[in-house]
Length: 346
Picture (tube, rainbow, N blue to C red):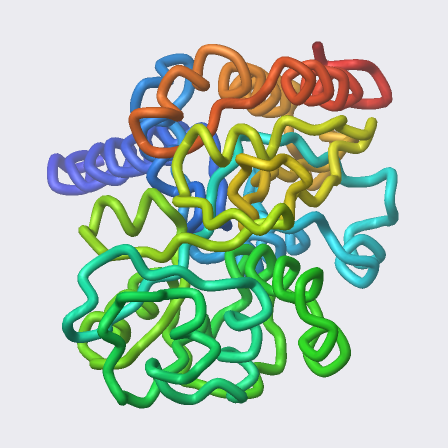
């Protein structure tokens, strides 16, 4: 073998080795909710036993990728619906592990109204139905005495992609407005009766910021990080609640069912913020599929175990509510049911 050929073979071997190292360096892949993305990026940057690549593509995208088995875990702000559950193998096939809870806030661009806007759930739904059309309408004025609301058309902004944030928002509207419940209902990608669509939180925020009269919805952490105003929302008890970590915690401190799939919108808690939700990491219960190794499965389950324990210390600084003790206990039980080859991983 001549020297040139030897060098070429060595280069190929080195490149192949490098590719293998590169592939193994990214131990786990996840995709889904943009709602939880700021928290996940912080958590995963601090987690040393494995490297985690999480793509913030929306809950619908995360579910689609987990269904296609191209990621180790998805994350969704809405539990799987019946159709999604069937595609993934039935109710027993996929586990829902709560990661944290957070608030969806209503943000707006109303000239002359920098902060302090108040909205009832009924009026908010009527705005998104296209029934309340101007900022100085009697409905909005009644909730905001003393506020100089302009005679300006309301421009409704919503998500254009499948979104857990949209599910939380429409789940709330469905509970507080019968007209919304009948005509639209709750969904990750509803048939919006009015408005303009923006992709992701970034798209919604961009449209709200550049459009006088606009109203939209994003997660609390995103609104705070981007210095966006957000409204107080009237809860079931008639009190207007400013979205905060404390108010979100009160809303999410509920009895958790064994499968952890619970809605906490329109809370009964007198001081709770009404547009709040858990977000769930989704994994297959049986981890032995598509050539996955037991080591891969163990890394995944240990990562999620860390998220619901040590990882919770990062929640409050990023404006998420840490899991309650009952939620942690339920999440532990779900994770312990994960198997590899029919045997418990933990």
